[in-house]
Structure formats: structure tokens, C-alpha cells
Length: 355
Image (cartoon, rainbow, N blue to C red):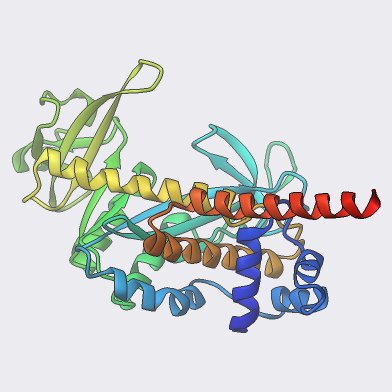
């Protein structure tokens, strides 16, 4: 990994205001670094989760003394509506927008220690298998490796890298029985997942043996009350709780949580799960502050390497946040304000010269 070029390109992604291009780097450095050098950097390497860990490991070891930490998982879609389709740029269903979107699907593992949040691994969802739809006869794509398989692979990688965390947090997309079994039985770790309201549970071991299951939404338990039960097809007992909340538009919603840590109260389950929101902030920052979606790269390799550099850019902002106590958006605003001040001064200098 050419660290000097990585540092330069990541800094450029933070400081540039429009589109991230190799010619943009050349212009910013007054030709000291040519656009061919940046093009070779993006197309010559194969950077990913392993290289990210090498880069971020010293910062993680410094931050992990704050508390036990939680490991949050979630995916986001980097929209690419005008980019040619390939195994990386494809159509994915967005639960946020409730529709299919063309872009790059990125699954991330984010560790949180106090107010410090660093990505410790990520996977790009590649739809590398083509098939013909039986009904429409149109060619479609699918992934040979499922997102849940990537979830378990990322989690294994975090454990092998000795990332310190007490709980694995994820939304209902990842709350499969297989994922719970892997965390509980194979890794001997704790999880807190959200559940869909139609998940089936048995309130006692006897009811489980008789296959007497009922949906989580039909259970009669109080808000903020945690009760032991058995999930269908899951061998081990779990604890679930319910939280009724009010949305910004005044409507009410219900959140169901499940954990294998029986020492937690409902309030504690909710308190830990709320830390998962940090990964949503991460997604917003990497898109708006590290030029994730502002690259015209066309090949799978250059697109992948640009994403890696954007994630490094986020890490650099997070390290600055720790030192300055300014959040990512405040840091970038400060940079843009300074750039505008320099531009204004340059304009006035040109006007004076022309007068």
C-alpha cells in the first residue's frame, strides 16, 4: 500500500468540494503529483478490509481503553444512477427509501468506544452471478455470497483481530437464527438485535416442545419490560423487550429487541441498542464529508479503491474530532470557510491588478 498517496488522496477527498478526480489532485498539488500517478494508485492496488485494519489498528488500540465497546453492523447504498452497471454497481433494495436503487452496497462493522467511532471492517456486496428471469426473460444479477454470510465473515475477522467489544448490534435484517447461533455458540459473545413484529416465540420450554408459538407483537407485556422466551428454530433461551416511541410526525412505532444476555434490563437493552445509531452518522459523514459518491471511477477495482480511501478519509476526520472536539461537519465547514476566504482574497487581488 502506497501510504503517501493514500494519505494525499484521502485528504483530497475531505477538502475537495465537487467531484473527486485524478486531475483534481494534480491541480491541487500544482502538478507535483500527476493525474497518471493517482490513476495508477486507484487501478494498481487491491485495497479492502485487511488494509483498513492495518491503517486503523493504532487508533483502535488507543480508543479501546474508554469502555467495553459495542460493534454495530449495517449497510448503506452509495447511489450511482449514471454509472455503467457491473458486479459492484448494481440494483439493491433500500429499506430507507423502500425501493430498488442503482449503486454500490457497502456492509460495515463500526466499533464504538464512548463518543469515538471507527470502522474496523467492511464488505462490498458484489452481484457476480448473472441469470435470466423466468417471467421477463431479462438478465439479472445476484450475489454468490449473501449479506448475512458477509456479516458473519466480518464478525469473525473482528474477533480474530482482537477488537474489544461487549455487544454485537444490528437491525432486524441480520437477526437471523443462523447469525444468533454463530454469535452465541461459536463466538461466545452477546448480541442485541431488533426483531420484526411477526417473529414467532414460545414463552416456556414446554410450549416450545409443543410448537406453541405466537408472534412477538401479540405478546402481553408492558412497555420497557424484558421477558425470557424461545425464538422459533433457535435452541437457546433469549430475552426480549418492547419499546413504544413517537416519530417526528406524531405517529407511534414499536421496537422489539432480543438479546442473549440475561443480566440486561429492558432499559439497558435499549440504551446499548441506541448506540447503533452511530453507524447511521458514519454513513452520513462518509457520503457528505469524504466524497464517497463523488468519484467518476468506472471499473470495479478503481471504484473499490476509491471507497477504501473514502473510509480512510472518515477515519482521519474521526481522529481530528478526538483532538479538536469538533464533529466531522464542523471540521469540514471550517475547511470550506477557509477556502472561501482565500478565494475572496485572490479575487480582490485580481480585481486590483485589473483596475
